[in-house]
Length: 163
Image 1 (cartoon, rainbow, N blue to C red):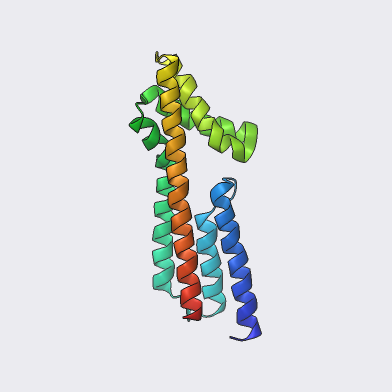
Image 2: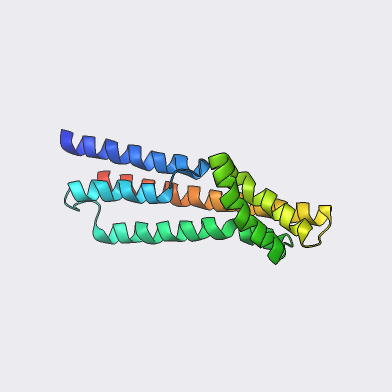
């Protein structure tokens, strides 16, 4: 590996690690950044170690992680008894939370939105809190899945570059 490839690898890893950071800081695009790090390396090395097939696999994993991220909160809330009111509150809470509190709002907003809308829809406080808890559990589950997918992509990338 020459100095050019070492520099490319280092830049790619910085991009990918920023993606991993994005898993816990929802303001960063997480898994798409990891894919971009692999793509960056592939383009500048002529797709020698990182092939189009691998980039396609990474793209599929990226799409899967986005789907998991977007349905995690809703799935968790539904599993804990949320109604359509709670789901609507989760979605609106995500948007409102982002604009009012940035990255923290993306975590807290859906939970608060679920609770408020469940109560508007007629649930008692305990039932609304249970739905909000389910929303948070879904968020944590989605975040864990994203972390596993991101780590797997990085491990495969490093293995392909040095293997």
